[in-house]
Amino acid sequence: MTRRPQAWSKVITCELQRPSKKKEMITYGNVNHPSAEVIQAVKGSCDKISSDPADVIPDADVIVLCMPVHQYRDALNRLAPYINRTKKEVYVGTVYGQAGFNWMVHEVERNYRLENVVTFAIGLIPWICRTMKYGELGANYGTKVVNVAAVTPRNKFDRLKEIFFDDITVRWHQGKGEFYQACSFLSLTLSVDNQIIHPCRCYGLWKRYGGKWAAEDDIPFFYKDFDDVSAKCMMLLDADYSSVRDAVRKAFPDREFKYMLDYLTLERVTHNSKHANIKDSFKNSEQLALIKTPTMKLDDGTYALDTEGRFFTDDIPYGVLIARWVGQEFGVETPFIDEIIEWAGSMRGEHFLKDGKIDLDYCMKQIGKTGIPPAYGITDVKEILD
Image (tube, rainbow, N blue to C red):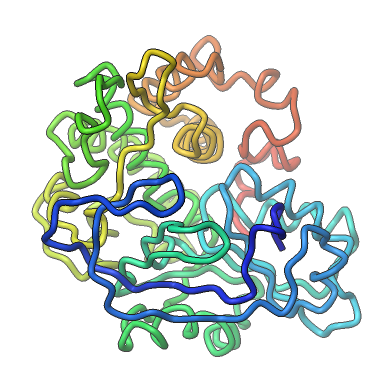
């Protein structure tokens, strides 16, 4: 299912790539990409391609959302009326478990009286991927060594691993990428790393360069050129997150929260790495080396941080702000989280905080504006667990 069915080919190709030693850029469509070595090409066929959920959802046994986080809730409400109630089980999930995906699915279960849904969310996106030619060609830069997913009901994990999880990692990556079960969706919500990495790197680029560059060649790579300024921002933000995680563990002592980890520990687990610090984890990552900084070209020919992209629309209202709400409810001070939220808000004309607290009137005035628990009717922090 896609908004642009006419742009999709019946046969889709995914290239498993690794960075090339060559410096030149390769153009696909109107987009320049760093050159890479193709290790393997995998092809698949699409039986149905449509923008209408009525065409594809009733036959689906597994429904997977692959889209920006802030679009999940709207997509679920579009899909829910067409989920086949006669099937014993329909698996509804996402490849990236940021922002309390279970809260969103449980909302549509209530609203549409669905009783056969198994909900799942993968913690970190299992691979680094890029679109090379929309609807036809993608690039995959490799899988994580360890992948984590939350599932409810919990006893459905093994079945999902058999019919889905293994097929997207170990089958195509020489046995790498095994999936393990998280004890709670909250583990993913408070430790998946995009919401920590992206805002800090963007803030660091703004601090160091003003978030603007005269020419495209001047723009640093997002990860390969990671610097001390961005690393310090990440250290401070992750420290605030750790304080929130500690409060959660104290409030729910019966939960293991094995995979609710700080950034560097999670990176070592998922990548089987031994990086000593945050900066090295990015600069030395072959998997991340090809990722460019998302920018937009201005009318004067210069380039600026893309504040309309998902690093701002996902990782603030559906990431950092959720941690801020949980911390606020548990009485945890989060000074750098506040700094990031205020800075990002100033870049986009948004004000999620007021008088040292989350501005609930502002956050709730528009459906889907943020992903904080009150958006789903959860006002008691003790009810945030699945």
